[in-house]
Length: 389
Image 1 (tube, rainbow, N blue to C red):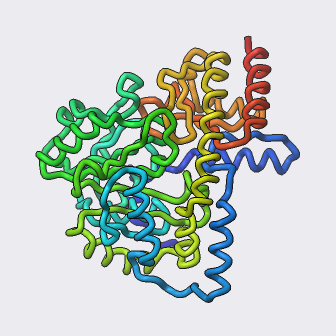
Image 2: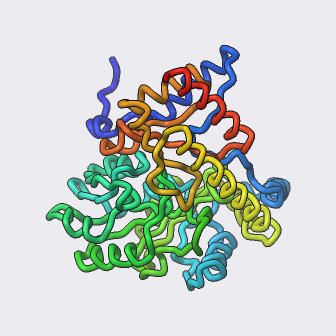
């Protein structure tokens, strides 16, 4: 007899990005050449100083449990990073080291979301964000956010949609899937509006290090009550290391620490010791060079997509995604991505995962792959669309 599954699973949809990746992998097993621009994973790996630090940690036997909040050295270098890059004085005691940004989001939702709690977020959004809310029996209220709003929430929209059950907002800047950021003044207004209503503001900043056109800023500059998520996966190219952090108000630290002790014990000790090296001048120099390469790729692929017939209504200013309107090429983004995979050998992702508002008309492209792959993908898609005319 199979066990009865919890009813909350009905509120968590499959992750179509991963399903498409499985199809692509099967085609590769059959001998097909596939260019992957679906999953948001840097093609770079950890910088050599970080790998060396991990090897030293293992050689020195630093592989035991750590504090649930993380090793002091890592919390301190992250605090120094906020001071150096953003001019912010963040106490290391407010920084909780987590098993990736996913664990940070899980801890934040576990601490703040009650049964029936409504959390506002834009449609489109990273799908797991709404599922973290659902896991704690809250309700993600997805608000249609088009290119006019840079696919983000605005203060006006937050005011309009805040209801009796609303307790907070969950934002991402820069965003997955759109690569767009919330302007500083607009984010300041949103935080003030939420604060007036005694709600919480969670801002996912895992792509903040990959901001290209203006000086980056952190939502932490808007007050100690703002909760920020960050990660070593994207800017630091450490996806499989499962390391991230959470910055919370001092008053929340005991509650989050208690949750972390029970849910995770701690993040990987080896990853934590390696993570300290991410902030060395040598490593930062490497990461800044890679950031420049991501920008170069963006500056190639955005006009190339427009030339192919996609509409890119908002040029992404961060992350490594382009969110492109494919409605001039197809009336069904999901079907189009399957056809591009099978006929052109190119993996792109339909808007289906990111919310209903853009599901049929948008695709997401990840340019976290080599320039050679991007150029070859454009060549293949040119032939694909030419054959359809």
